[in-house]
Image 1 (cartoon, rainbow, N blue to C red):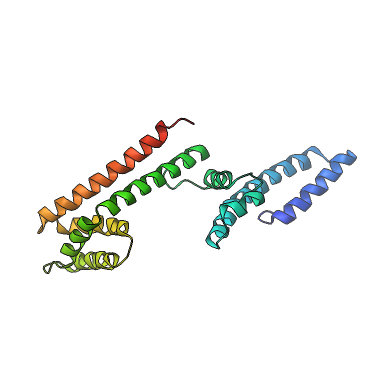
Image 2: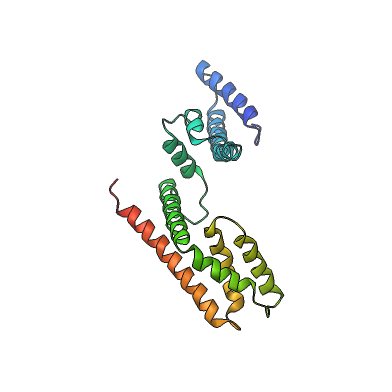
Length: 203
């Protein structure tokens, strides 16, 4: 059977099915068809999350995707996608991937809310870092990325470059590096707490 060509494999399997219905399919053909069918099923299953991701990137909403996926709601469509997606962080099951993704989003929301409440402090620290004049080339490049984020409206966007620049400041600007470390510890705590609260909710 034509491996790598799902349409060709399906045609070959159909021929074996037809022969089986006539009672003329030898056992080795039946076993080969079952093996080929499993391979095609796995290949097609791998295409589904890829197509969903492409549809989302193209602007399709979860509501629009739901009927195409045979589910009843946008939540069910998103849940199906998360179950099918390979894990980037080691979760072994689809349900664990759903849970991890929802925990991550809860953490993102908590951190973004905290960043907005502490916008003036974050912007002040970012400005302080970008005006340091005794940075080496790598530190200056990191500080420049922070400066670019400082010009954006979303203050939460300052957090990744603030964390990244911290390592460049520990030798000559230990006090400032410590303040950035405190921010990193606080945002990590917020993420843990948000995930914990979500797990504690019934259902």
